[in-house]
Length: 266
Image (cartoon, rainbow, N blue to C red):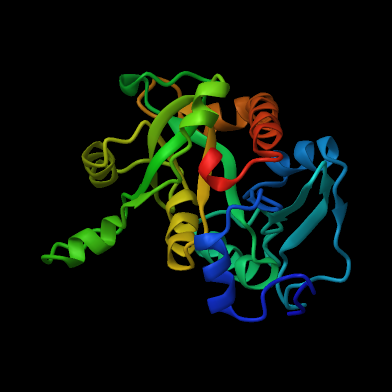
């Protein structure tokens, strides 16, 4: 991987700059799992695809980049699976992309944006957009003391009280697993996580972001009601395009708000 020239020369220098700097945010890394979710933002911010990739040539990951006001935006989509041609969704792709993107691009802030299932019992409706307060896994069950906590992997999102006050977004907890459907065991874990929304990437992004102490926020738009009457896959596909537009608008508002601000001002 090649590194941009204007980043600190070592990981320690980078972490020090993140911890102690009061400078305005200048670099945002947006991680989005699906092309349908990503392309509206690519068009909105007139981002260009990077054909001289900062990533190894073997991976399908796609980087779009550009400037918006004073912000360098890097949007990373994990691309299509090379064998099956579908979006590379799930925690493995999400964690690998997050790790490689932090190393190559060293952002000030990560935004993990995407669609999610919502729970009507927790107040979620189709098209609602949530700013996530914390992330956890629901399919890493390790019933051994302390390992059980590791399996849940609870991570806090960056606290953004001013962002919440300025935008019309709901707040909820996110639970992540590698299946679109929900087994009985998953349901019990999701309830234990007190989750309002569920996805297939968020907690994996949070795990890597926390490892490198990069602030991260999570914006999730509801495509399907998990505890509703319609089959999840059918409802997800039915609403994906419409809800992706709502996600696009919410992320646009978030980026507008971030421009010119420091992390502690969010």
